Image 1: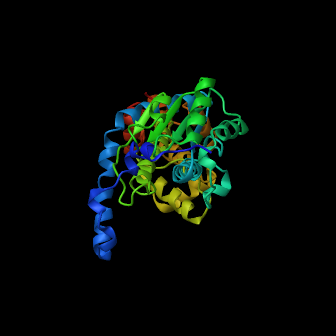
Image 2 (image 1 turned 45 degrees about the vertical axis):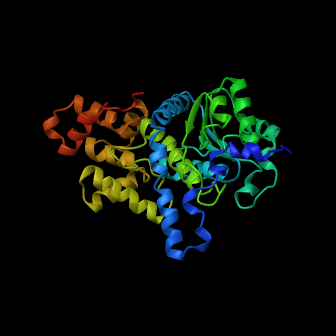
Image 3 (image 1 turned 180 degrees about the vertical axis):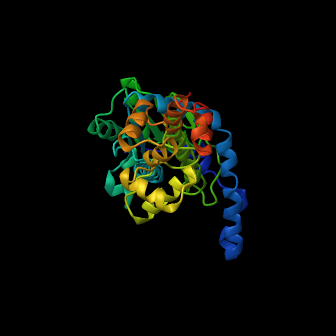
Length: 331
């Protein structure tokens, strides 16, 4: 097991004591909550300092995914759980394949609900776990560790680098070794935690914000949205079917009945239903249009309107076409 000295801990920002919470054990409930809330307000400010690195990371992720690769998150403890959480949410939100975005946690699935002692210190286990999913240079690895020094994550980044795969680190410690090990470093220095060393708090919140940005921005760049609507939502239950119907209404301005009938024709694919209504095409034609434009709805609409009298099309369709290409697919 890896040994960590007291002196080493002092170099980790999150292990330092927070002067604003020294008497937190003597505070009233309301005061405790206020202290935590005030500390949490520092998190988005710290993340804001990382936007250039996050943007760079997104462009790399998008390139790898377009070329057939996968986005792999890896971490231990809270960091690992946050990676798994972001990964599993991509399927229902953007209708991507289950293996396109994956989260790996030290200790395996059991570690999602129970602490697995020593798992984060196992340097060799990370390589084994990446081999198990057949990780290659075509994939992109995001190593997550609040301390920036977790051996499991170091092992993962080292292996990915050796393969020639793009590597990204997400940490909250400027002195963390993964910051220099990864090709792209994202470090949100949120400062000492309200409870010393409890990185599930500010550090965890920062990591959650960053992972949300990485996956959401990547999916937007891959054509998974139309304006700010989740047009690739996987309508797998009653709530999501209602959401898909509302999305179609919002995007086209049609009534509930037309939205529902078109969704039924489109097998509840909101993007396809929107295209059918705005471009006035059938299911087969709509499918072909979307395939031709790599799923970018605006570009599919623009193709239809380019070859037709735009006066015969709806205002919504023209607005969509006019916006096509404004950032769609551009790096």
